[in-house]
Length: 231
Image (cartoon, rainbow, N blue to C red; front, side, top):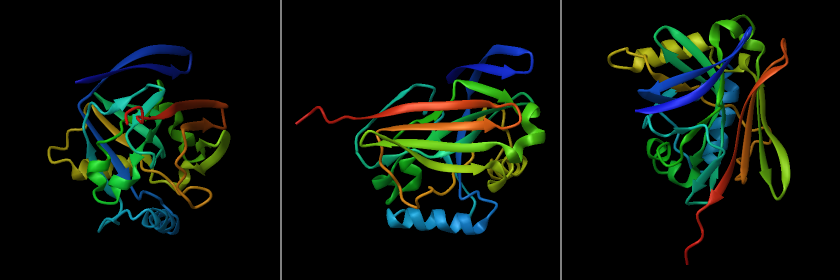
């Protein structure tokens, strides 16, 4: 079982949290604005990614495929990150992180579920208690940046009001899990359209979840390394 050693940032200080990952799922096509969902689908169609029969969608991911590391090794240059909030459920507690569902776009064109197993999900090493941000949830801001040709590019930006609420995502996931057991579950929220409408295959990715009320942020940052050292 994969164990994440995290830091819980909360009112009054911080404390270490050890989270055992039993199950992990990646949601998709989760926008409250269905027009934004349609635009994201159009982005992926340009990359020949098949569209699911129903939206939102849910994909299982092997529980060991999660990391707080700052380097991803990939076997194809056509990979990209996606900004997502992350929910971690443990014995009645809900932690909130920020992360990236990094995906091999070529493989995604033939099988989304297999593409989810090629690159690990990346998550922030710092998390919040959901209860401490629940009241300002819709005002939290999700942003991502990618780097291409030495230039840092703002890639995604939205308030969480544009994505299904945490409660709705939890209810959706519970409805799909056969035994309804969400203890030890990690849920990636699904992402939002890129600002420029195009997927960028960059060599680094950053994601921020920002609380404008307190000016606090969660961060997930990593570089992408192509395994091209063999002839």
